[in-house]
Image 1 (cartoon, one colour):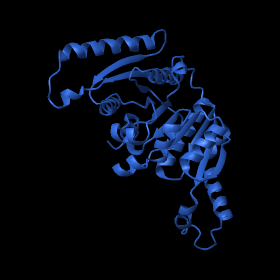
Image 2: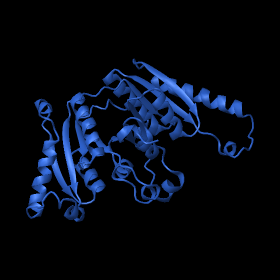
Image 3: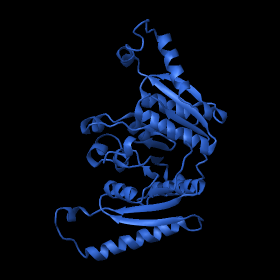
Length: 305
């Protein structure tokens, strides 16, 4: 399964952090010889939502559009690739999702500022909504300090790719994308499964119905499953590194990524109810908010929104 990205969408709010996402989008579009769609969404002003008037709305909107056009042109100046500016008006997550579907996008990129706690609950996160609704994988570029953000990003050049594997359908799809990216970039592929010990006693009972499920036996079983993920034909170019960790999944994945100097983390997205997502968050949410490298989140069935 070789990656075939023909249209890449980069969402930008024209901030320094988003400039880094655009730079990554340019590099990826050049790598895959893809068309880059640079999308900026002008949010509806709060008064207009409630039907209240504000001064010279058309004039104000035109100024925003002109500014966005100019900033995007500056970001793309001097780059030789096929690209298209897209300026839309509305709520960011909804409009980016709509554009991605209408343009049949193969990958989307955005930057994150890593909101946490109460601020995240009250304001929400465009990135987290996009993770669950986009019809394509979402590559999230971590926010950097202001000085670093002003520097042009180097080509992604992913050399070490980490895929979180929990053997669920979501994780299997993420693995396929991780394997594909590893092939494209000839990268070192790391497959990591995090054992949550209390959960395994019940979960694996059917597997070990005819023999004791000791910790050693469980680890051997999981190690075998990890190694079995890579198809035989891929082993001609890929010698995966497999690792079993124990503890809280997001903390162990982040620790491993930092320890191994991973360039890209690939994870599946699991559906959560509203309360579960707000108060707890999935492993992917938490990794994205804390990772120091890009994270590719893969949602099954082309999103659910």
